Image 1 (tube, one colour):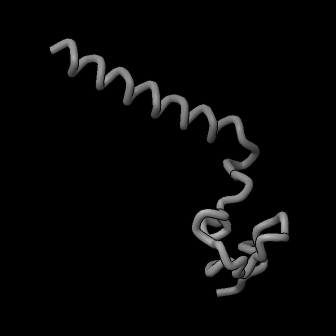
Image 2 (image 1 turned 180 degrees about the vertical axis):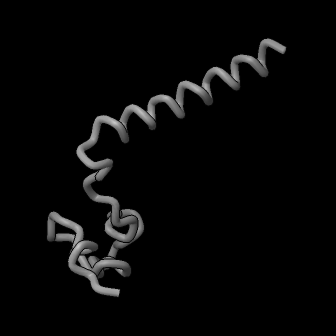
Image 3 (image 1 turned 120 degrees about the vertical axis):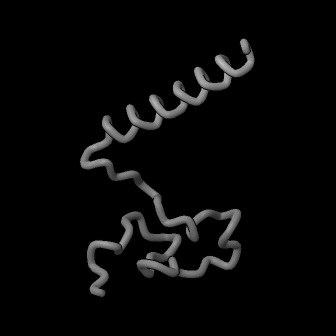
Length: 67
């Protein structure tokens, strides 16, 4: 029973931490959210598959993409 309560407590702490991080960021935006821009995933330096951002560029082009 102690293990179950400890597990639930740790999960609640993790969710609270994520919620605080989202709440503290302006408009809930995070820098570098393009997963394909990770140096571990994109070893060839290709552009982001979603927005077209190159690894050398700072901002995501998601706002300028028209669908």
